[in-house]
Length: 181
Image (cartoon, rainbow, N blue to C red; front, side):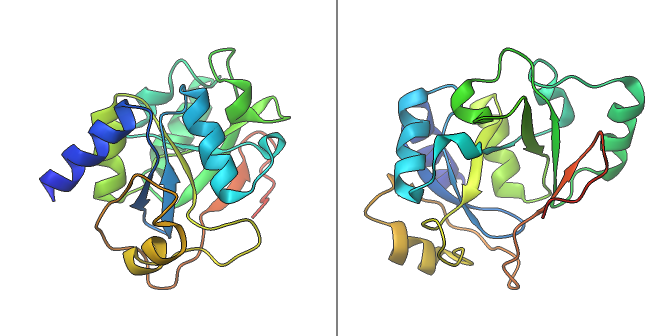
């Protein structure tokens, strides 16, 4: 597995796009600060930039300069994460428009999957996390499906398990409490 992680991290640092396991489904990932890589993810998914993307972080501290949180919100997130729950949080100016889309908030998650956490930790920044599928198509629930559907379009598919039920994470607006997915 370490060889897979090393290869994936080398590709991410070089501006590549990977498919990787999360606690929910396989995701497409790249360095969120590399606009060309993010635009490639959007093209693979056939997803408009206006919709925005999720950032998957290794821990809450990795989000410090990307989101605006008060102490109570920070404690709330620390009590929930790591978990397959994505929160919409007010974005700082450091979050690129190609990540936020047409929003002033950014979707972020600290999930419990060891591979996804190792990738974010190794990259030193949260990574893009969007389901490994084309818009309107079912999410890839395993490495075989990720490779079958997107293998030609990504630079590497990382080995790992996902939840066999294959459900995407819940998305909740932290300020309003509204469940969006």
